[in-house]
Length: 168
Image 1 (cartoon, rainbow, N blue to C red):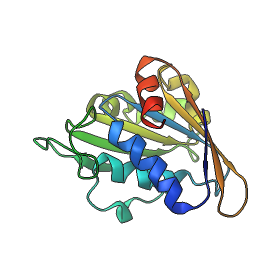
Image 2 (spheres, rainbow, N blue to C red; image 1 turned 90 degrees about the horizontal axis):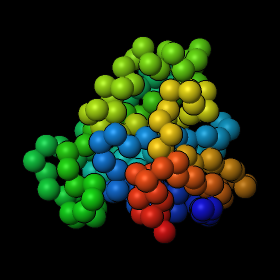
Image 3 (cartoon, rainbow, N blue to C red; image 1 turned 90 degrees about the vertical axis):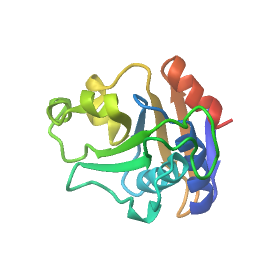
Image 4 (cartoon, rainbow, N blue to C red; image 1 turned 60 degrees about the vertical axis):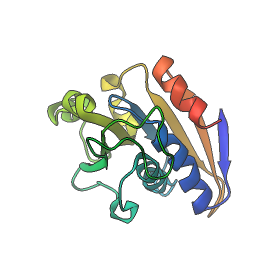
């Protein structure tokens, strides 16, 4: 599926819809050049997942992993979308693999443990592809001009198909 965004707000809206559907164990692989809007999309995903202040979401380029409490334990719904498939407690792991040597560096950071506790949003995911599960939701971001973006979305299995359906 291909989605288009004409501005930052439309990018955030796509992210919010995706974030509202996330559950523990989900992997969202983001691929695209510098400035394609990966972190902007993650801000929208964080909003949809229930992160209280998405302004705190920033690129983890130098720290590698930022962790956000999205839907805390005991919360029955996300603030933007009410109860639904992604309404259980959730942590978000925003990972930037640009500075990693290879996928083994991500493995050493405890990637499996992250997936056991939350959902992973991985920028530059093509750099760590051997470690990623087959059932992942991949978004390739294509800049069209200064404000417009094209999102090529691919679901690798049944769980990621549910994420794809959330964007329809």
